[in-house]
Image (cartoon, rainbow, N blue to C red; front, side, top):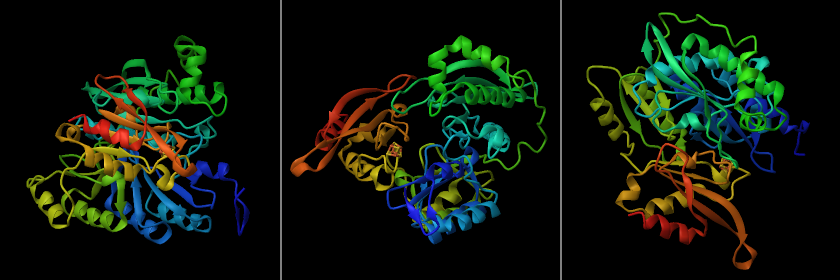
Length: 431
Ligand code: SF4
């Protein structure tokens, strides 16, 4: 066990506060929850300042719209937590057995403005609520603006917005999906559910998960074991299930990112604190003071004014932010993650270099191990670092599986066990 000046640290206990042990030296990763990925300029600047003071001056944007800070030190955690709390941010439940940050797809779906409202309600209900902590493992919820991208398939609970009728928003509810070493597509638990029924249903599912699933299993394992029918029965007898929560107000629609969307590409989700500060200034000036962290680890600014996005694009250009690049979700890999088998950012640079015109138009994702945090099975092409093998002089070398997705379901491996050279040749063949 790692020893600090304060004595032995129980990293398992720290997880509920959004903290993972990054390596054996005791460096820590802290994950900040950002519901729907929408963060104010003020909050963004505070996270940038924390990064400069207590981390390495770089923010890692995740594919769930959260922010990770690496290289954080144990003695600094109280100050970091205090700084986050001061601007209404939390890392509570961002790791460990809890309801994780509520993510939203920030694809081009029309429904993004609507689903942010539900994401914030879910965050308020579940984040830091002791009733929903101490779960067998993580519990991931996403509110999707449409079926585009199929991200509902990888959630413990995926809520897909169908539209607004009779003053009510309506959702399909999907359950028990997940990636990792046993990728499992979610199944449809309920169709066309009114928004005032969503939180009670989510609560019922979380309680069934907590009560009936052994640690450290995900919801998908419970459903595989007892079957969909039995799972439905358990959910429907939960006291919360039949309730409605009439909590809509005329202010629900305020404070949302809306309008014309301008995306700022961020390579591998690695954003320098200084760049985050500049983007926060531009958000204040052009985008109502809000930034949105996208599912592809970029930053989007929504311009809701008469001038549209032209003035913002010009300002971004003048500030040195680059234009379009290959859409490529990248997990930290062995740059920062103790599970990582490959240097994902280095591999990504080489893959991008090897791509032809057709390959550059596709959506890509690479993960440093089979845990699949960057969702490679949902890219047009995905790369999973599957194992290490002994290479020259006993040095370990990564092997890669290449995935291809053509329909709505998960992508499937089309090449397996590739060396880096073979991977680069294979991606070059795409055209
Ligand atoms: S996919 Fe593996 S290497 Fe990448 S962040 Fe997740 S656990 Fe770490």
